[in-house]
Length: 173
Image (cartoon, rainbow, N blue to C red):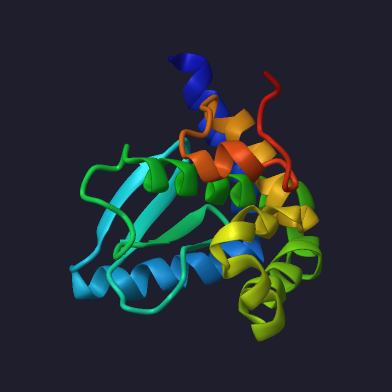
């Protein structure tokens, strides 16, 4: 238990120093959402996860140690498949944030935002037959690897098992 506390202290320290710009952006978002009092919040392996009640079409986003997941898709049970896998994936972006520091914006955030929102790419990875294509983008597949390693958990949904590792099966066998 003590080792886990040290691990989380380092996680927070790196977010509030090396990854400060992402953390400030995420902290502001978290504070603004907290003012409404309508959103569920929890800690997850050092990150602060907020379930955003919105009709907008987004799965999740990470800014520093602050994770925002669409509450519309998330069931009340945080251990349902989609929520479980989304938390792992977004936690991976938290780890990328502390690894890259200020380089997170051009290396991960910008490519991810373009990949997720540009109509051409959105159409490509939103079709049911090619849903796993989303994780072929280097920063998205990499987030899955880091998130699973940091959480010490495995993916549970068929979609993530089929294509979470850069569009390839998560585990062999």
